[in-house]
Length: 60
Length: 353
Ligand SMILES: NC(=O)c1ccc[n+]([C@@H]2O[C@H](COP(=O)([O-])OP(=O)(O)OC[C@H]3O[C@@H](n4cnc5c(N)ncnc54)[C@H](OP(=O)(O)O)[C@@H]3O)[C@@H](O)[C@H]2O)c1
Ligand SMILES: [Zn+2]
Image 1 (tube, rainbow over the protein chains, first blue to last red):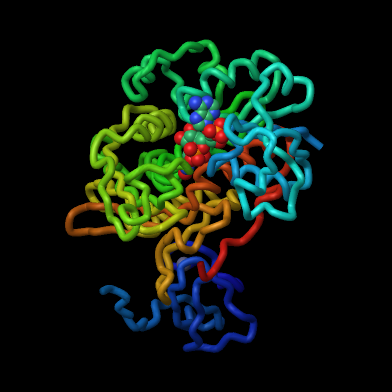
Image 2 (image 1 turned 30 degrees about the horizontal axis):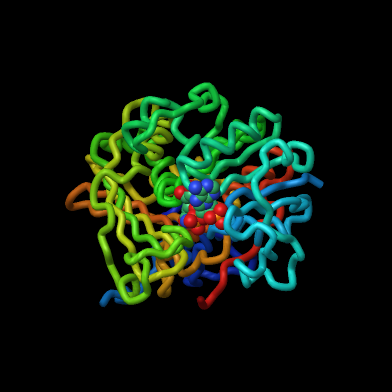
């Protein structure tokens, strides 16, 4: 995978830092969805996995 | 520099036009008309403008303006604009009308929605209803432009991409727009219903059915989708001074995936600075809220999907005096003059307000 991946929620490009490591959390700038970087294969490229996100309750 | 005049400059929209035009780098404000305040400094009526201009209100003189101005904004009540604007158009001025008098392309709609026969159907054909995010190419070539109603443009910006993208399969016969509007939407003229004791703290359904702006919304959406579209709208007066929140309900079977709705919005708005997509997964500011656009020309747009019922909720928020009126009009002027559409309009919203 290149230095960007597409957000699974909104399809916006999500930059993956050069020095990223497996398990690191990246967040989509457009929609705020958090992803965990997972290894896609043996070549060290990363893929996005939906990260556990705490459901905050803003309702009244 | 373009020499501009504002008609109806003592009203709320007129005042907002003055505020924007006074800090516009390519516009020279040459006249601000008012019947009741002619001869007075404009800052006596619009106190926020004290120290920014020495301009005084003047009486409207259609012929006189033709010599001193290149472009006129008309911020008069509907039914009055239709008397003043033809004088300017016939004299060759560029005109941007903010009333409803030149928004509907079909003159037969005026007796239905506004209760009068349109005296100049020939001019209606020449006016472009300007929503730059949808028809900026048409606006660029126009010399006569009208700006939509504030609830109309707010709702349209949330709905347009969803009707244009046929692959979403939106039910065109059942679209419901629920609008919540601040008090400045009713203009600056006081009445019992706007009296503080009556207006403060209301959630007043003032037009639950048959809102006039439905006609503009249907006109724009039908031209985008190429088919008839039926829009039902309910409007409420709420406890804000500026701002509109439009909550639109659409029905789609089967319900779309969020990513497909995102793609439909991006396809239309990717190059549009003044539409911001707001659908955040984190924090308290997840969806459009008029509180977060006040003072700016932004329209924030977001959505949510209710899978169980096949409902797509499209939300949009504007400052009714800016993107809902004066800001959209100045953006349109920029396009008509061949300027960058953002010129003089890039101020960020106030926060907190
Ligand atoms: N408020 C909004 O959010 C909003 C948004 C979009 C579009 N609009 C449209 O913009 C226009 C102006 O709205 P507004 O909210 O600014 O209203 P407003 O505050 O009531 O201002 C109306 C202006 O028109 C002038 N006027 C009133 N009656 C007139 C008459 N019979 N002949 C000539 N001039 C007259 C008034 O000036 P004098 O009495 O001093 O002459 C005043 O300057 C309306 O067509 C409205 O539908 C309003
Ligand atoms: Zn995203």
